[in-house]
Length: 102
Image 1 (cartoon, rainbow, N blue to C red):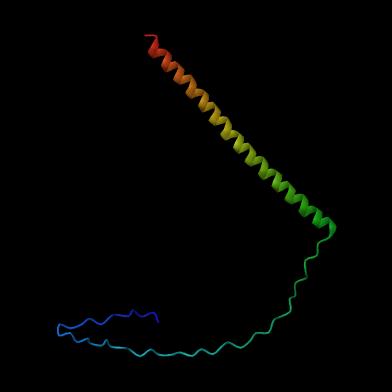
Image 2: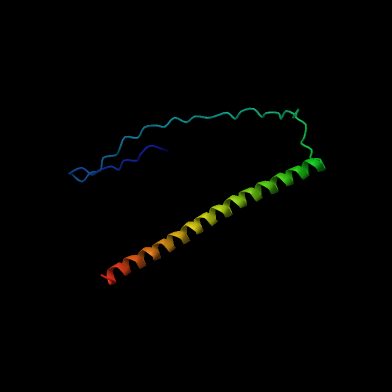
């Protein structure tokens, strides 16, 4: 199946020589015996109202912290962009003022 198939090239006489074909060994696999499922010795997880409330509170806290971090990063990028724009306008006006008044 994974062996390359090499085409037969015609000889100068025009006759086509067949390629040598190697026999492929067939291997038969016997399926493994079915396994019996072992009963679990772990107790099932049971959520009490206090545990559920703690999970909801923890999830809410994580969402609020991640949201605050992302908003602060966005605000920092916006402030840096605005300050760079102001610096560019000031430098442009200084350079233009220096060229015209000489």
